[in-house]
Amino acid sequence: MNPKHIVIIGAGPAGLMAADILSAAGVRVDIYEANRSVGRKFLIAGKGGMNITHSEPAQDFIGNYDKPDWLKPMVDQFDANKIIVWMKNLGIDSFIGTSGRVFPTDMKAAPLLRKWLSTLKLQGVKVHCGHTWSGFSDTGKLRFTTKNEELHVACDGTLLALGGASYPHLGSNGQWVSLLADKGIEISPLLPSNCGFNVSWSSHMAHYFGQPLKNIHAWVSGGGRKEGEILLSSYGIEGGLAYTHSRALREELIKTGNAMLYVDLMPHISQNHLISRLTPSGKQTLSNTWRKAGLDHIKGSLIRESLSKEKWNDASSVATYVKNYPLKITGMQPIEGAISSAGGVKRDALDRNLMLHALPNVFCAGEMLDWDAPTGGYLLTGCFASGVYAARGILQMLNFRSL
Ligand SMILES: Cc1cc2nc3c(=O)[nH]c(=O)nc-3n(C[C@H](O)[C@H](O)[C@H](O)COP(=O)(O)OP(=O)(O)OC[C@H]3O[C@@H](n4cnc5c(N)ncnc54)[C@H](O)[C@@H]3O)c2cc1C
Image (cartoon, rainbow, N blue to C red; front, side):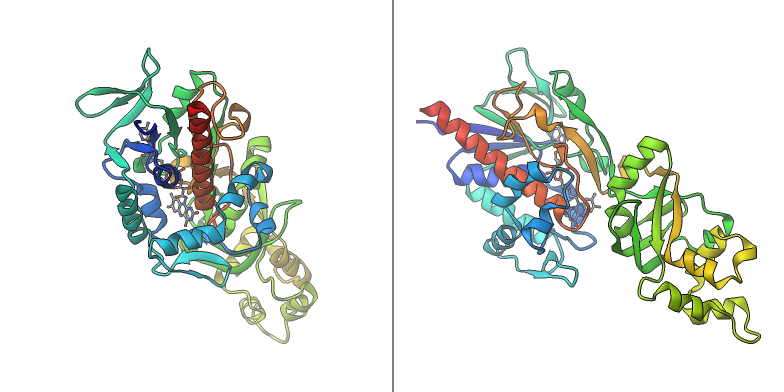
């Protein structure tokens, strides 16, 4: 009997993970990928040190997703420990960084991807690069366009793992949205997540563009404080701590057009202690007083930027701004430069195995689903885990159909 044949479209971490599970179970798998090579965003994720997952306890881990109850059954099946074991089986050791984040020992994605692709090849997976999915033919086959031709492919089931719309030059450009929307599938608009935000800096701040604000805490109104670093840029702010709050800031910007990020510039000193340090003694200049109190140039300039000049000598006002600095956010950077996208195929459009109600035997996984998470390994974990979960859903479907 011929093995069942599944087509996976999109060779990112979600699609490759599904291919792994399905081919290991004896299913014939063909992956179609628009790019000329696979896993390009995965490789970029490895450029600055690939943070593949996070070692915190499961209940904390899942709380990082905007829809934890949807993601939980997926992440339970392929959690941080399973990711570490999976890497180990591919010959890639990992380590846990001081923040609890998990990285491959060499911090890179390329060696892991190379070994993964060899395993997939051994399991019989065929990869067809340079094939762009462009919808369905009149007879319900998958339509692909290549440089020279249009191809119609029949199969027993399909997994769409087409990614979001950030870094579109790497392949995931969100063009699938109209193809699925035309079939009546509900999709939340793809929006920037883990992205930079706009701040209307005065010209005085230009000197500090490209410099980090280190060891600070930041929060949004009604949200928890997070520790980290923000990078100042000509348009505003970027970096881990801005990304952590990107969901809340984005939602506030959409609602009101503005948002506020509160920053504790010196979280390791109490306000009272700071007031006493900021109270000038003798003939000390203001700059000296501030410097001795621990306000470096960049933090001092931020205070000058927002606090009116007549209050600069008032220790109490300065301390209040240092401990509770209101950074007014005026907009978001475009999705093209974001680390990830929020939005995607809505949960209600899918059954519990991630199959589309409107298109039987067509499943979805990865960043194209309507979930959002901060950086910290949660994005890749969500993509791997939904790939595993959809693949198991496909196996269930195939068994059911072969009964
Ligand atoms: C700079 C950067 C750094 C990152 N760092 C991290 C990190 O350290 N940790 C972390 O957890 N996450 C990180 N991420 C996010 C992570 O890389 C993504 O969330 C993840 O790659 C998404 O996986 P995916 O399989 O859903 O989609 P993708 O990786 O986007 O793959 C989708 C694939 O589908 C293909 N495709 C799209 N449309 C079509 C079509 N019509 N026909 C055929 N093929 C198509 C695309 O070419 C692409 O190869 C980073 C992202 C960026 C941009």
